[in-house]
Amino acid sequence: MWVERDEEQMESNTTVSVSVDRSATIKSGINGTATKVKIHLDVFAMSQLDRDEVAERFAVGPSGPILRHRVPTSGTCTERMMIVVDPSPAGVLDVFAKYRADRKRFLDEKEAVQNAGLAYAPRVVEWLETAPVEELEEHSLVFQRNNFHAFENDGLSNDSRKIAYDAVDESVLKAGFQRLNEYRAKLKEADDAKKREAEEAEMQERYKWIAAHGSDRLRKLVAEGIKHEYTYRAEFKAWKNMMFDKALAHDCPGWVEITPQQKIQHADDAPESALAILAAARTSRACKLVTVNGVYMAISEYNERVIGWPSH
Image (cartoon, rainbow, N blue to C red):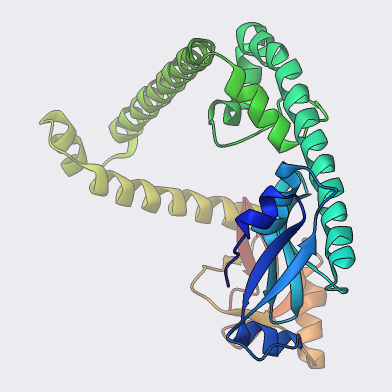
């Protein structure tokens, strides 16, 4: 589809001629036997600018004559096709008048968005220069030009916020970002210092334990400065299990630890003998009935571990 203007008629301010593909006229139901047909629009009363816009935007599509134009949608501008129900000059001009009204509304909204953004820009500068650095960290997305993050309840659309942020001088953004980076560097330094202190304290505890409970081989490895991580962890784990077993035997006679490798399941439809196990176990501590690897047992918690009764 294309548009042709009759220059002679344009100069006389009488008509605009629109050429239409014949295939489009057939689909739209407009009569036309020639390869092209011309729809002449009387635009005598229109300005030169309006006549040019009619000639540029009027066309015939599969659904009939249409007017292409752009209208605001959710703060943006998108193209929309207006179907011309009445393809007469009066009908086309009526649709064109609606287009002009839509366009004026869009331009008014665009100006309002622009003005709101420019009016808010000084507040953005003030916030970047004076806000506590913790607040800059909380709203650090502001520093991303393509992210219109609101650092306060500004009531602005993303379009207005973008205009406000774009109006801020780059040097102000860089200064704010530098403040933020310095703050982050201090936080990291403090965090690293805490980690080093914790590691040093852990190593001191480790050497104390090795001196008191470690094997001869482990103590020799430490004395020679040889890496001993796996040896230490294995011995320390065995020692903890031994201490747990001793405490369990003292505090909960007849109970044993249930390891993570053992399979615990619900004791559905438990027999009378299983209920007797539960009753006996509850004489020493709160517990519940389950099966452990298919065997009925009462289980409870002790020192953050699962224990079972009876020990069989």
